[in-house]
Image: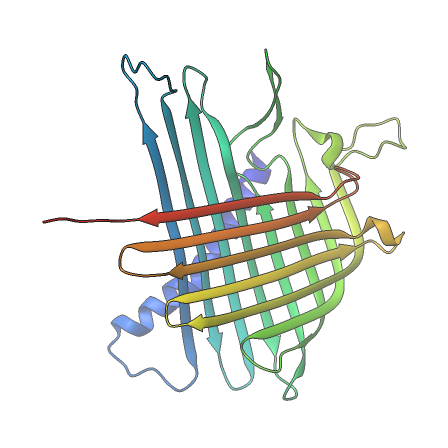
Length: 288
């Protein structure tokens, strides 16, 4: 419960920039040249099919997924405060089988950069990651719980130098501490297999490298990519990699598309890279 309270406090801290931005707007004062910028990319995808005495066969299907990506950034003359969040959750149900998760992700990050020069500046950053609900590993006849809310949860604090030649491209490198918290599922997330005890918390010191690219390809097309890596400096193959890419397009009045490609590598979890792809295409036709 104590760890869950910590997460709620962290989430509340991310609401501060939203409140500050709203206060500036509702006050009626003209925003200065420097100030808050906001960005929201969201999608809700729903698929449903029902069959009743359908001779050709078919399975009743219901699938849905919600994706939300936000950014609140305060640009000032001597500092920059950037806050980002990503939420994804979805489920699918086929036939008489119980519903299963197709997406479950919470990511929050805040970065404070102090401007000393035009391109290279010191920064401090904090980021956290967990999920909403229980995750299961399925077989043909059973299922086994392997994760849950705040189990595991990852937090990383870093301090270093950032390079930003423009708004489209940013990168930073710094010394970092990464904490992994678990409760009921310490293996393989936090436990050290080389010790007889089962550890529920893991703390690693190392280097954190983040590369971000965001470009509005057209008025209705947005592409963003973020490479997030952490190394505890033990060996090259122990580098944790999270590469997240999002392509959002409003193709026309009746067609919109979102494509998310994520590549993960964490040797503690799997010796193989993990890939997740989500393509959501929406077609809307109206005849009135």
